[in-house]
Amino acid sequence: MPLLSSSVSSNHWGYIAGFDLLNAGQQQALDDMQSDARAAGMDVERIFTTWAELNPEDGVYDLNEFEEQLQANFNAGSKTYVSVTTIDSSGVDDVPDRFKDDNSGTGLSTSWSSDEMLGDYNALMDRVIPLCEQYDGFVLSVANEPQFYFEDFDADEDDFLNFYSEVTDHIHSLSNNVAVSITLANHELTSDLNTQMLGISDVISLNLYGVITNDPEDWITPIEQAEALVSPKQIIFQEMGLSSDSEGSTVSLQATYISTLSTKLQTSAQLRVLFWFLIHDPAEAFLDASTEGLEEAGLPDEFIVEVRLALSGLGMCTLTDNGCQLKQPTWDTFLDELDAIYSPVTQSSFSSGQSPYTFSQSPNTFSESSRGSSSSRSSGSSPNTDSSSRTSPAGALTPCALVSLVLALVAIV
Image (cartoon, rainbow, N blue to C red; front, side):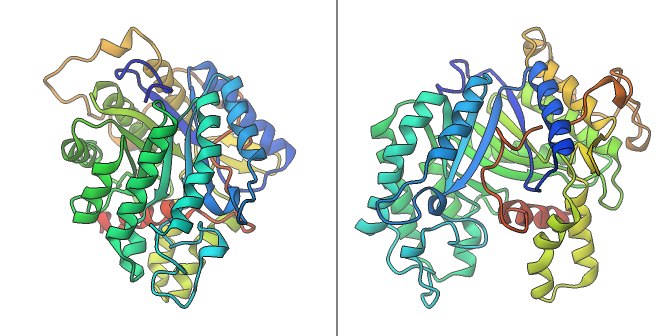
């Protein structure tokens, strides 16, 4: 990832801002949080958009907002993880309408590797990749959690693998600096399809959410399993999080999860970037939209409540009428770990041998950060320059995050 850093030992941690519509006071609070995070060293952002959004009609390209976001990140000194999705875990909603067919078993009117689909996506890349080069878009992800599409649709895996391979080759012909990836849920990574997608990818992009536990090794084990599977390729976790609202969880446990991930990031030879999901706890409308499909599917009310709790406490602050109340010690721990990650002194300060992943106290009695009370920090991280250019009218959670969270819940059970 040359546009990220010339050193493969460098570590980076960012966050995903969220999808709720905010008022001026809430937005200012998040902007203040973003300023604090950048002051502590944060230098990565994420843009999450779709093929359909950038190329809605044949020969029509809507790249203005995309370029503005890339440029804003670049001007702030940030590198950007770019996702221009073809598939999300819910299916092919991200494909332009001209290629959709609701009566087809694949959801498409043609094959992935047809001249029409492949040619149009590559034509979009002809416009996107130069912008990534110009504004330090260090990775281009082609899909989010596509493994679930192949479970739900009668699609030809080889056809999509050919599409992905051809797109990767085309991007390589445009740039030696932009890495190509597909984002997978940390779910059945050893399947034949997933293994082949991992093999095509320049770097590995995964989504993983923490289980509620008293043993931090439970958080580290799946990361180390992923490292062993894809070694020596570098890894980006483009979504990681743990809810403070889940049964058995606390804000202190959430903070411990953050510090544990930071230690792993700094001691791993393969992990390069982590993105925390989310900066603020989602609003009720967001939760309603995100769980609507579960209700329609007839899933038990108890499970839907668990999912809502797994979503509702993901943030590092909680929205108020005119701001965002910091969650402590979560927020100060995040800032402390940014200080550690971006400090050259701490890059080589960990020794091998005994596991560094231990609770200094019981999770329920995790001490307050030395940074002090929430009043010592400004209160708020900006959706304007971050994380996601994708929103939905209802502010719904992106399907990839919802599926990953459900998988985490299943792991708890």
